[in-house]
Length: 118
Image (cartoon, rainbow, N blue to C red; front, side, top):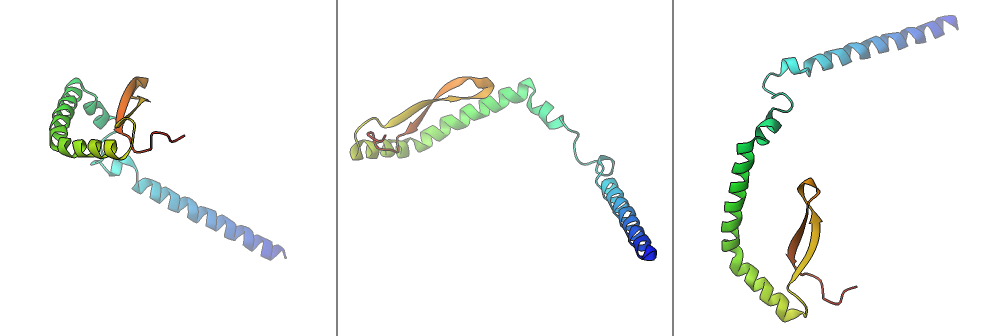
C-alpha cells in the first residue's frame, strides 16, 4: 500500500505542476505587453470627457433631435389623435425621472394605459 499512496501523491504533484505551467503560459499570452494595439485604460474616456467633445456631442444631439422631431411630427400627431379618439383623459403621461448627476427631469410619453387603470 505505501507504493500506491506514493504513486497517488506523485500523480497529484505532477497534475499541480502541469496546471501551474498551463496557467503561466496563458497568463503570459494575454499580458498587455503582447497586445500593443489595445489602448490603455482611460484613454478613450479622457478624450470623450474633454470640453470640446462634450460640446460637439451636445450640438450633434440637439440638431439630430430637431430634425427627427420634424420628420416624425406627422406620425406623432396621428398617434395623439388616435389616443384622444379611443379613450378619455390626456394624450401624454408625464413623470419625473432621475438623470445625469442625480438631477430630476420631467419625461413626457404618449399614454398607453386607460385613464381609470388602478
